[in-house]
Image (cartoon, rainbow, N blue to C red; front, side):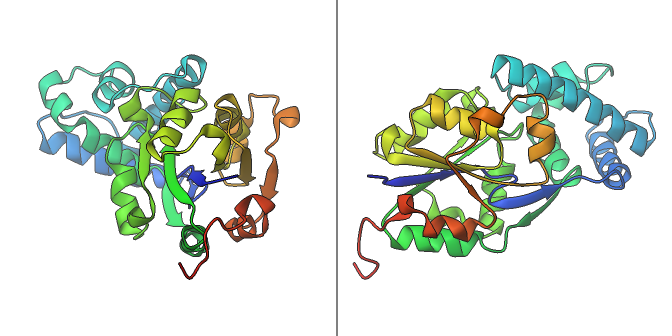
Length: 255
């Protein structure tokens, strides 16, 4: 019997998009923040954002090959700002804030309109709920769950930047199940990618995987032959999950 649903964050509970016109504003905000903390970088804002974009691409490729996630300071010192002569002590102090600014500036994030209703429905049916998110920031996911007023639904949250592993590493999925007090075979994972979400859930022995398409899906899965590894269930709206057999109530909604 399924007892828990665990969710991806970006692309699943929230819509996440990037457009080239975001670059200048993102670069400007990060340059200004660096300068205010005594780390001046002489580069135009849009060019700086493109530099960060390229370094992010390189880092993500390394992360998917190794299934490792570094802490924010290591990411920014060893990858994003490696080509600049910066004060490392100052950078260490503000690295997570930089990661937060990047996640909120490079991307536009909005809550999927049906997310709260789905979570309310699953909670009312007696399911335990959790989040596993790949992120280079240690605070942004927690903050934004509070901003969306979703934090109270979740009994466990795993972030790759804290755990040190990236999805699809099975240990993230196994740890989340253990925190919820359920066996992996009693869990369903809901995400938007095959390469990270479906593979991770299967590697951990979850009961099923559910996938919804997002703006991030194609770029995340483009390097992988995912056709034969498709999720057990495809949905066009998160509310479709409530109609799946795996979402059969385990307690009365009136209990």
